[in-house]
Amino acid sequence: MCGFFSIKAQDSTATEPATAVEETSSASEEVAPPESASFHQLIKEKFIEGGPPFMWPILICMILGLAFSLERIIALNLATTNTKKLLTQVEEALSSGGVEAAKEVTKNTRGPVASIFTQGLMRSSEGIDMVEKSVVSYGGVEMGKLEKGLIWISLFISLGPMLGFFGTVVGMVSAFDAIEAAGDISPQVVAGGMKVALITTVGGLIVGIVLQILYNYLVSKIDGLVNSMEDASISLVDLLVKHKLSK
Image (cartoon, rainbow, N blue to C red; front, side, top):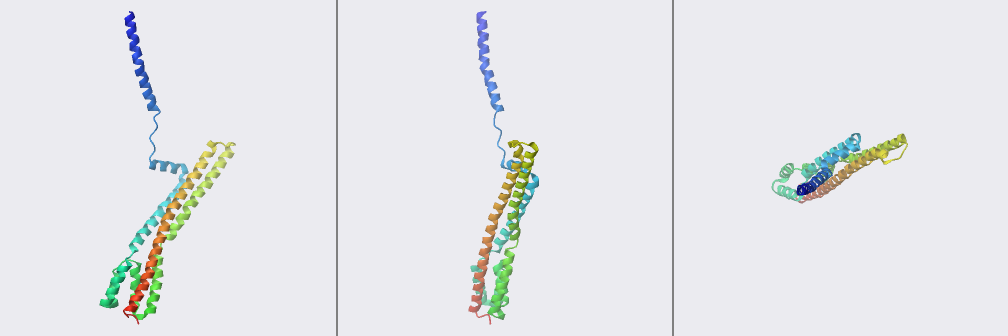
């Protein structure tokens, strides 16, 4: 009998560690940290926390600003012309076929520089002064085309942060209203309004920063094209004088 009880005691002792291991493993499963949220899910949560009435206008400013910026980037890249190559082709055409041959070269070339050349060549028979006036006048027209749409990008650069600050003011007013209603300044009372205030500010600043970078890139691109247009126009006048095609 003593041997039987000693064996049962050993069996019960042997099963206790296994039970403890199972409990430990189940407890570890319960306290396992949750998976981190994805970037998309995090943005979605912050958008909702900031308040859709304030975040939707900021998001619309971002979308429209990016759309105008993308359209201008594509248009300016298409307007870029190899002016040295074009001047060489025009000079060869003037030497071989005269003004008409040069016009065909410029008409078949894309970009504002080629358009200015075409206008200048069309006035070549009226004298060099008329060529210069035509080039200067049409250069202003082409520059206006290059700057098309920049005013809207500038608008969204200003409007995005302004909408963010508007949400900040509304959030602060909401926080003070909650404090007045509760009669107590506690983190729970102020947290909601402060969260709206800070998230809308961050959203508006992001819109302003991104669009400002794109705007500066577009302005520098336009400046480069304008300088190229001016240099090419002077070179065209020199070519006409060289070949004595103007009166």
